[in-house]
Image (cartoon, each protein chain N blue to C red):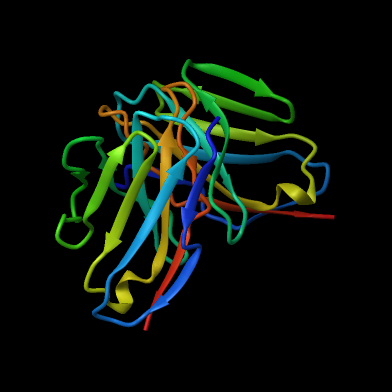
Length: 114
Length: 110
């Protein structure tokens, strides 16, 4: 398994500002992902954080809005830029230990934009 | 058609009963299937994975897979109030990424 520390756990932000969410894993992992869970909804994959190269974004998500860094195999950040109330969601970091043991999640960041 | 569809909830069962959670998926090439449990206000946790047709049992949980019917289910025997949560079905698509269903909320009444 993997222990994932995500911070902040929650934040209330003003519209137009940006928030950077950090995800730290206690072991080296190949795959790291960022998900969004809007209120009452399921999880939607934002992007795959690639170590040493640009993140791979899913349809509907762009780098300018959600820049991602992955400087090494244990750490990643997601920035939510120029926030609006529609960005109010839970943002989750996830790692894949191997194909047989999928997707451990961090505790999530509950973001409220006012 | 949604990529992953789960039976709409909330599903309410009495304590000790069997809870049956269903999931259908549209991607015929999916080979790996996962069930997650999410308590209110918490992040999802993996409870079962299944890769081959048939049944896979783990304690009180049984996952069933039928690739021909593109159907996967989760049975919870001897349901306990602590099982009350939202259950998320997540097949892995051709690229290996998990696609989550909308979830089924389960309520186990004492």
